[in-house]
Image (tube, rainbow, N blue to C red; front, top):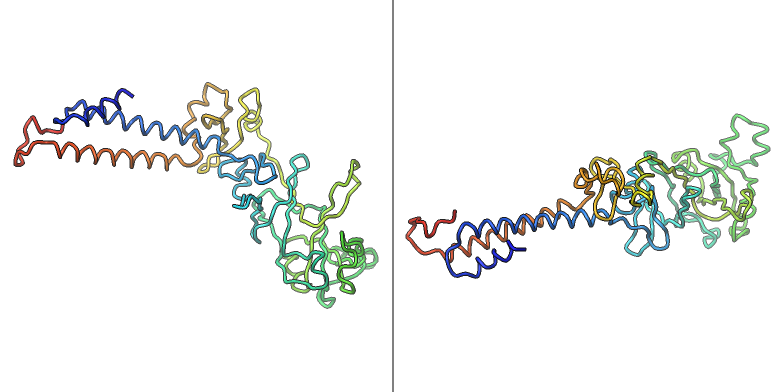
Length: 342
């Protein structure tokens, strides 16, 4: 603060600027750079949003870059309207819920058939997941296909077909499916249209099915009570996910060690513990090695902060130079001790 006062005192004086004024000017710029850099670190250390709408965002997920696990980087998006969406190769899907105790996500595909469609089948798109992520389609999903071409798709009652052709059992679309006869919420929605149940083994098999079927929908089995066998069917897609467990993350989250947030460096993707005042590679209350890495832990925005400080310094420097030049005595280009800058 003293340097700043001396600097402005030098400016206000209507006389040539001595070397000491320029020294205090440099000190002022140094302080401004340090403050901007520190504020950038602090802001980035606590920038992880913990929710989107009514859905909690916990590890391993993050909706801000550098938060959560790098395995799930950029897969969740919080829209401007406050809806959480899952990004996949086939599109973006609204997230209905996330369970961390039984790790899974429920998403809704608006292109899939629903009860309101009835027998008016719309063109749809095959749902797919990025195989490089730690997501898998849950085995608790059932996929129902409507009005399939029996010339191209094996549509048979599965129990009988499997007895006759055990080697082709997995390739049949089960026309005796319980869900085809008991559609959740609209048992008789599409009248005389045909329905069969088939679990696609891969995105390609789903795409092939949709080439020969009018439409499809996904139904998952939701826990309906205290018993694990008490399940109820609901429309949606259940996606299971893994929670990477590491010693670093457990220590970081430990309230006895500071209660930080698990994150990662956006450039190296190495682990970072995000604390209120800094980012460290261990845990928030580690006063030994963690301080040495506090600057290396900046997730994003530091470059912006430094650039702003640099621009401020350059602007102030030009303004200072013009001020000195305007006040310097005219000497017809002859430099003397009175008009020397350094």
